[in-house]
Image (cartoon, rainbow, N blue to C red; front, side, top):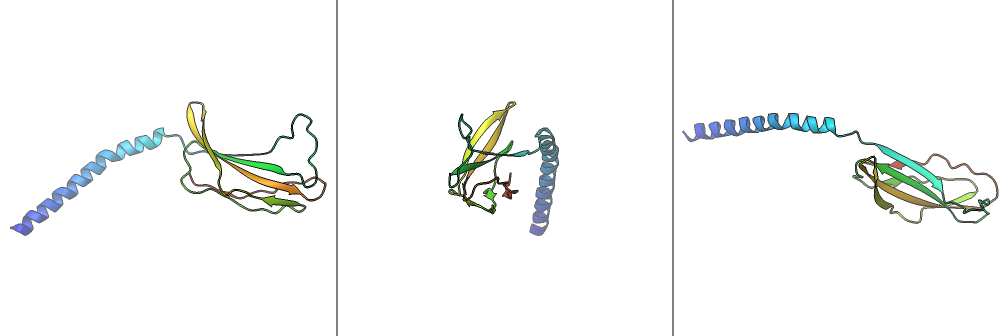
Length: 137
């Protein structure tokens, strides 16, 4: 008799779990349909030279900013790839980004701003190559 009761209880619990899952599935699907897709943007720029806009000098410290933004949140550590630029010393002084949020069209965006320091060792024009960025949102 006990085996029969346990079997019946297990079947009841299984059916209850299946019923609960069936009720929650449409709500989860509807929530996913309403939520906008995750977006990630990347913006980069060099620190402003001021009003006179004079050219940079050899050995002058130049800050390269990389700013990642998402309409979700960052779920793992962001990694900025190292790169070489002939004639320029490249340093990432901090392994941490500046984190902040900003509202865009009524939606909160999470931002991470990274700084890379460049020191040109010779005069000339330099083109910054593609930089690998690994981000998880």
